[in-house]
Structures are given as C-alpha cells and as structure tokens.
Amino acid sequence: MRFRPYHSTSAGSSTDRQLKTAIKRILGYKPRNINLYHLAFLHRSATQETLNGLKVNNERLEFLGDAILDAVTADYLFRTFPTKDEGFLTEMRSKMVSRNTLNNLSHKMGIDQLIQLEGATTNAYRSYRGDAFEALIGAIYLDRGYDFTRRILLERIIRHYFNIDELINQEVNFKSKIIEWVQREKKQLRFSVIDEAGSGYKKQYIVEVSIDGEALAQGRDYSIKGAEQNAAGKAWQKINPETIDLSSKIG
Image (cartoon, rainbow, N blue to C red; front, top):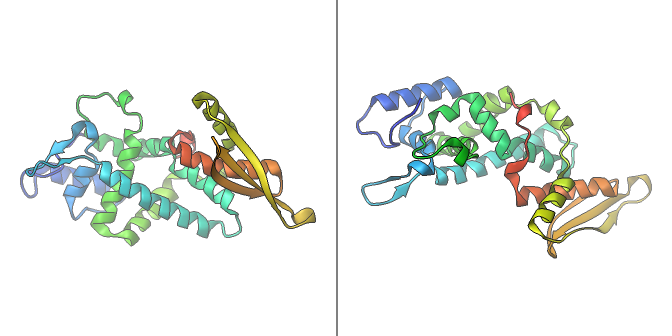
C-alpha cells in the first residue's frame, strides 16, 4: 500500500480513510490528526514543499519519536528489572532500539508498506523502515500525548513483538565491536580501571573507555572484563547505535 502526499487534498479523502484503516489494523485505534501520520511515512526521498515554501518529510518526527521511544524503553526496563544495574539496562535498551531491530519491527508490523519513497530503491536507504517507525511514534505523541503513546508502545508493541528473555540471553560483545570500529577508523582506544568500590567479594571495578583521548563512558562490575563490557556498551550506543543486529529476536 502506498499513500499520496501527507496533506490531504480534501476532507475525508480516500487516502485519509485508507491510512486510518491501516493504523487501526496495526495499532488498534483511529488517528485524530491524519496529516501527522501521512507525514510520518513521507521519506526524505519524497520530500514535499508546502505553500509557504517549507520542505517537509518525516525526519523531524523521527527525531521526536526517537526521544519518546528511548524514554519509554528506559522506563519499562527500569520498572521491569528493579535489581539490575545501569550496565544491564543500557545493554537491554541498546538491543531494543537498535536500527536493525526497528527495521525488522517495522516490517513485522506492516509499517514499511505505508512508507512513501520516490526515485530510490530500498537498498539505498537501509534504515528507512526503522526511521519511519520512530516517526510514527512521534506522530502518535503529537496526536494523542505521552501517556497514550506509552500505552501503545507497551501494550501493542513491546508485549507482542519482543521476547525479553531471549534478548537477555543474546550476547553482544560491545568491546569487540568497538575494537573493530576503531581499527577501521584508525583511532586510538583505551580501557582504564579508574577506581574500585567495596572490598572482598563485594569489590567492583570501575572502567572508563576513551577514544583518541576523549572519555566516552564508564562501567562497573565485579570483574574487570564485565566492567569493560558495561562501559563498551554505553560507548557503543553513542558511537553507532544502528548496527546492533538483533532483529532475529523480534516477533
């Protein structure tokens, strides 16, 4: 299914009705401001110009949706795992909101069938599915508010499409990923034990990761290796959050 421009030419147009039906099928409700949803699926390759000369596409909504998704995911993980440390929570959030995960989620939900692309192949824009998913979250937020968006994410998406137990057991070696990245980019990487907390069997190591002399993140664990992984996970999210491929764990 492909829809025409995000702004309707007439009230109650057939494209509006089609999109409302699609949103109802995917998410269980009918939009109020349908123009927001048309815009959410307007890829930059299909950028349009408004009457006042403003060029529009879904990138601003993507920016907003990314922030909302991060907040809801962080809140969900914080409440679901009350005894887990920040390293675990950071790694889990990275798994849930990575670009490959969102690309696959968009396909599973049928969101990718609503995206308007022009003059481009899907291979040219590898993240367009996940980008549209985030833009959709931004549209829901503007249309219905934060509480409604949070409920949709928790009840219609996370509960139905994420296997949390499998995600927990899915190993991601962030340290190896960072090492590969710095080698490719010809940068200098350093993991440093900067402090220790506690003593005896309760002792934890605090490790800082830096690239080209710039400190990116810190992590702590009962082993140096674990602390390095925690720090690497936080640093990797800053460097390149799209490339964690855990899409097989969705749906």
